[in-house]
Figure 1 (spheres, rainbow over the protein chains, first blue to last red):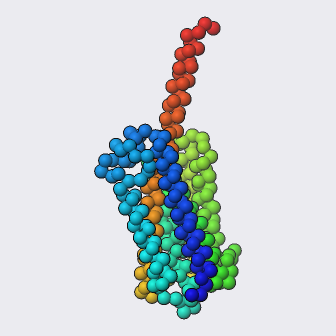
Figure 2 (figure 1 turned 45 degrees about the horizontal axis):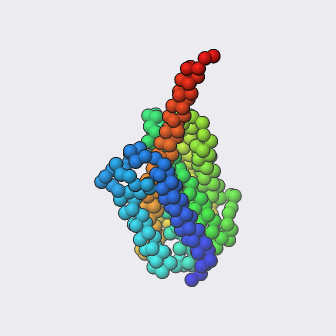
Amino acid sequence: MTHLGYLLVGWGVTIGVGVLYAASLITRGRKLSARVPSDHRRWMSTDDT
Amino acid sequence: MVDSEHTGSRTTRILGIAVILGLIALILLGFFGAPEDDEQRDAVRMIFVHVPSAIFTYVAFTVTAIGSVMWLFRRSIWWDTVAAAAAEIGVLFCGLTLFTGSVWGRPTWNTYWDWGDVRLVTTLILFLMMIGYLSVRSLGGGERATATRAAIIGVLAMVLIPIVNRSVEWWESNTLHQKSSLTDGNLEDLTLFTLVVGFVVWGLFFTWSLIHRFRISWLERELRVRDLDQALVERRAEGREHEGQPV
């Protein structure tokens, strides 16, 4: 395969950044959810958990 | 109501699993399924991450612009929160578009960057504008004033999107970019299919991220309001204490 180095950098950084961002969203969500009472998380319903 | 200490839900879990499965399919198709290009050889495989990043940059900033308009005309906190969430994801995608484009440019154009290329420069301006949008939001101050300032930037940035997108046609002699491969019908069937898979994966990831980011912003707002209410209660209690004491 030609240009493998460029491909690995381009794809690797894209996927890596995506994974890190997703992890940061989950972590931030967990930390904040622990501080807010459940009745203030009004997007949640018993049908969608 | 559910006492779950996270911002996930059944919908986001399904979306998350779909993103992971889609990404595995995209890697397999992108590296082993799609054929190499006659001119670019295997460097063409960068299209599968670069183009979806660019298209979903437009989508994200369009959502920001819609949310900004809804804030300006209806003062909708919900839409303002959507606008801010989409802006953050859009900046991420726009940064990836610039990065992957630059990495792709080296083997195909023999350069990482060209200041004379209109699409590169307009994309960079869009990226910087939306970083400005996020900076304005993080400066603090009154919620309404911050939302209004950010919304104005969000709407102005929207003007740039058609310029970035059409720049290849409008300034044909000032760009290294080729015209749209999608509309020209130059892509082979499996290449086109893999690109569509890329769009689906990016679309799912955008939706997943938008839902989580929206919920995070909502929680942050709930905490701000709660802290403010608590501070008011404390001030009132303090005031009552002082009133009860002889001057």
